[in-house]
Length: 212
Ligand SMILES: [Zn+2]
Image (cartoon, rainbow, N blue to C red; front, top):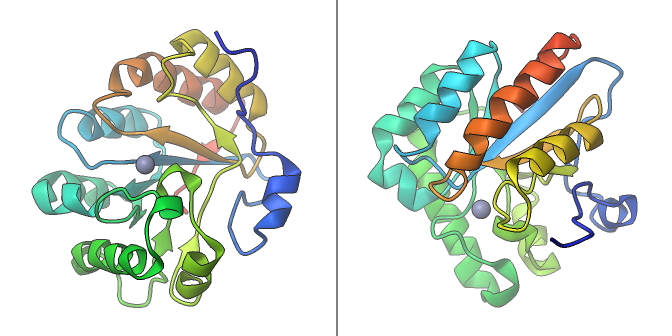
């Protein structure tokens, strides 16, 4: 197992990208859970069930292709009071995508999401892998809230098991933290162990879970 896993985004990285939202500093006991890469029928409804059990709201950063493929799953997310954001149409890596192609792909995803959003809502966007070039985000900043995270659960990593994933996610979460999970086929088995335990831990300590 790797000795170091960057569960918490270092302050110096956050300072390099001041235009991004990394967390929402507060003294209130609130945590912002986020789920990337859905909606997919194999994972998203399971996540929704856990959230509803704890009366938790969350934010789902959706891949446009999945929105088109599984509109019923997206509707379920929205009906249950969660927020949705843009995660590009094809889950692109900004570092290896020409600027115009990237912007078009983000727009493509947004078109898929717009019918489900209130007109006055400033769209949220999270770059896949957290990889975006300065030129790309400068072009997006006027139209989107760019949302990153300060706690990386590591649910996607084959190098850490569910117990470590849970322990580290709990350890690094603070009031106002934005925690990154994935509602994907790859992560759902691990999430079945991690997510209810995470929700239980913070609920018992008086935290609530809100959407962005
Ligand atoms: Zn992703």
